[in-house]
Image 1 (cartoon, rainbow, N blue to C red):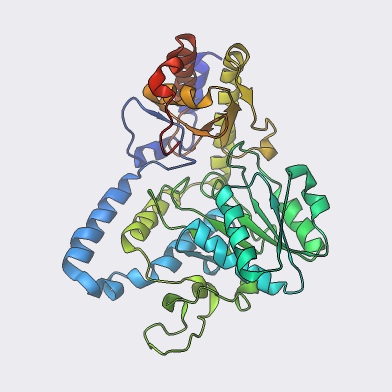
Image 2: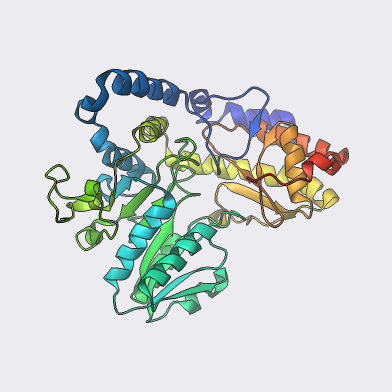
Length: 409
């Protein structure tokens, strides 16, 4: 594809102005927004204000004066639009793992006569670990792990919960949320979805598909910063019966009454636990302002165009240097990332990072590239492939320093 054609795509991009909303290190092509989103400019000023004025001057008065106590529901309401939920169905709190623990326990209680949790054996490990812990805690539960094409067969009259991540973290494969949720309901089970690689990358349709519970994180496509609070969704129809087994004081009906007995709050707030992390919650709150005027369908269209272009430009390199595409070409089955297998994947990625293109690696042999439509240009895609070709043509990945594994890959 000619450079002029790619430049024309950038000129016609309806989301191009959003790039200015982010801090962009010069010369860097960032293809890892599916692990940690870039810093929105508005976050810098918001955090400075919270630290200097709200904490530094107003101190404890800020719980009321600046609404610190309401941040979990305020931030949750902003996320709701991005995932196809109502504002009172989402709350920001804790981590994805902790939220999964909370909603999985709540879901299992709604199906007390059933003892099976079904999931993909390739699901993100923390989801599987949490499910294993819940099963051990309760006793008598089976975590039934199957391959993607075996899920329908695995769902039966014993299934309490179908627990899946909408986009496979390794391959970028996107599940058919509507079909699988419907399938679970037909068998009397509940559907719980992890949106870690969905929220902020493309529109999600929780209520349209009748999803029961969902969780997701704030630091990937939502750009809330490292360790940003996660979120959880409970469909309104389940909230009254969704028992909060982590019964902390912020989920109490009257947290400042300080009575010894726990009484769950009404609605989604009952799924909060302890004191919200004000600094990180404020950062996420500010980051979500970037999405206020974003057309989510345009976001999806650009995501597909970016990933299509990357796959097209990579074809000659894949054939020449042994990269195997593992991301589906079909749009309906693709998230907002592209992944390849390569036997020297770790070293190749480290060498590419040294050339100013940041992606990441997932064991055992996956090089992974995330495409965030808000700040990526089509020319960034072209530049990334050119630099990867340089890495392979010059055998830069053979340098011993790129062979040594760091703690975080």
